[in-house]
Amino acid sequence: MSKKQKRILLPVFLVTMSVCAALALVSARTAGLVRSPNGRTSTDTKRIGPSSPFASFQGQGKGQRVQVQVEQLTLWPTGFRPAEITRPSGPVALVIANNSGVRELSLRLDEESGNKLREVRLTEGKREWREYIELHPGNYVITEARHPAWLCRLHINAH
Image (cartoon, rainbow, N blue to C red; front, side, top):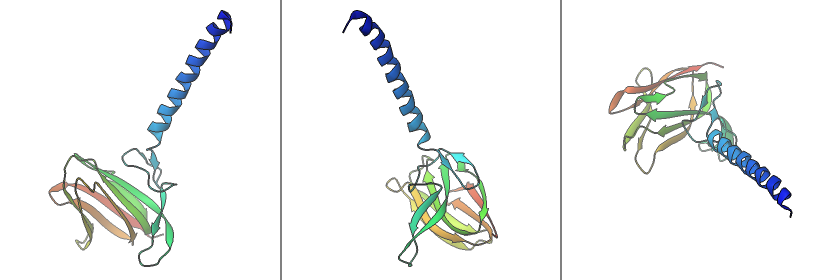
């Protein structure tokens, strides 16, 4: 290989490597992007399933997998993000990630009237709550026991 070819090949190689590195960086950054059914884009939580915002979940007691929409929330030191969700009634995969810095959390899903539907404890070993749930029209709230200001309101509309 001549000196002239080496002088041309080295910059071409460096440019190619720079482009590959840039593409890898962009791919890594956008891999965590999730678009929810209402069009919000979030980097708050990991994708679940192969095609978020949909995921396959085992139907409760039905023995077959169902395709459901995913509502992803993240708990930060300032509270839930998003703090409010409006969606149609029906099955949903509720995913809540703990990025609050608090090691132990007690999360509740209640009807606005106060009727408790679900309660889960998150610890260092379990930093995410994932649950398949059927939500009927009405208003719901997700809270954390020791932080009353941390809440997320769910408004569920009829189809």
